Image (cartoon, rainbow, N blue to C red; front, side, top):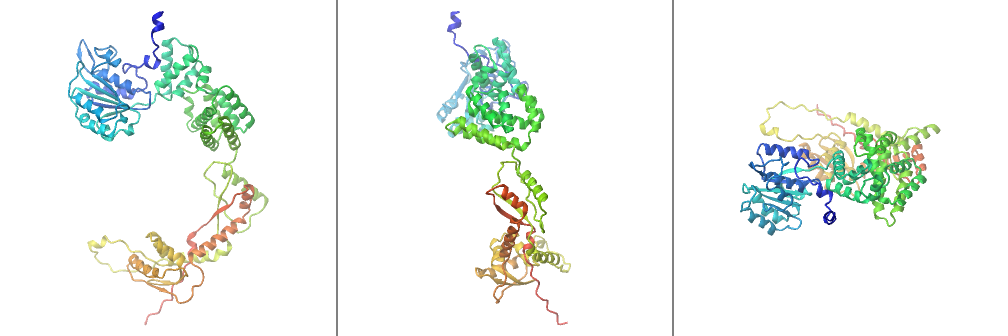
Length: 601
């Protein structure tokens, strides 16, 4: 009895630490790879283990050290069959073997520490077959330390093995990674972790509830060490048993069923019931930010079940989460779930920064309850369109309705984008432009058939300019921004024909742009162009001015549209920010070609 009282307690994470690969949990792929390598005697001299905390990196390193140095009455041989302890196994397990050197890179980061390893590598092992260096958190080494290790790591003596462990694999230089065999240790799945904890509780003769283990596994996030530490705490908190009530209190979790009730109240718009449930959970000791995190987690679960129905079969889920999660996934639309996730995610951040966490959590639930049943913008537009059609006929010409929005977010509209056709006043330019498009095709010019020289094939094709609109399009394609702006804003076309253009300059025009335009045309088309400035005062407007005028007219016409009026009345403060005129090509007026002079014939 005295020995039991004086013997220090050994935590579960150390007491049940795996000592061979048969007891290593959740890393079957790595064990299979290493088993094949040992069976074929293709054992590398350097290994690097990476993964999140508590998945078995350092434990795997010690098991590998045992496997390298296994020795029994039959002699020395590397093996993964470690069920029977060898001559060096006990010392390696207890961390006191002289030939297995463990170093923490977090406290030994410099080149001086690595230089000690380099110097000791020259000497063979004292008693074991191999000298094994285990460096934990290797990413903490300095650049100089990594560089000092390169040569030894690439060509070590045959009796030396290196095993590295890290949680930050991206911080390890590529030059180190290329010299090692890399093993990514995965998070332990929930069903395997649950079976592992049940086995340990059976060995400890401790009773438990399945819901309690599910909470511990979920909080452990795939880490064996974290899950065992939480299990240790739950045993102590429950007085020798693991129950759902004690685990909820220990972790500060609300009842999962009550979390689902709270979720249903909020998504149903029942604000009073939701705030009452939140206050009750808070009085029971639940943290407001944790409650919002639980709501967000359940929102994610419902959304995932809606997309992947098989997700409801997860072993870590409680019966309520499985059954009610399926039901909610069928009843709630995707837009409501995604909007709930966004509000809860933002509210979680606000609650963490707020001076009064409960008040911030209540405001988040109020916001979510009022936004849960709001229609999406496309539904609002469809409803308003139906009202307009039922109350009054639309005038002619009929403006186009608003395009449906792609989002399902918030229920307020601060800006609307309306697309409308050109008003009646701009119908004539539209007709002129349409006619010009049909008649302004470049004429084909017959060329004599000649044998092209080899170098002629490599020459770029020359452009053809048949109209002023083609000229603007060509300047845009050539990325000549200044020329394009000058054609649209500083020049007014008077006449246009092949090789000859006459324009009138605006008051703010740059006269030097005429020579630039002529040079660009010769380079683009391969022929000389005469660009003339008209002596007559410019009449009319530039292309840009006409385009802006058409847009103003379209905006005025859109404001008179009954649907737009209904939307602006429904959402006070909303405004019409942009009107897109369809068929922008019609906005470029065409200039009739100059009269063709008759030949002497």
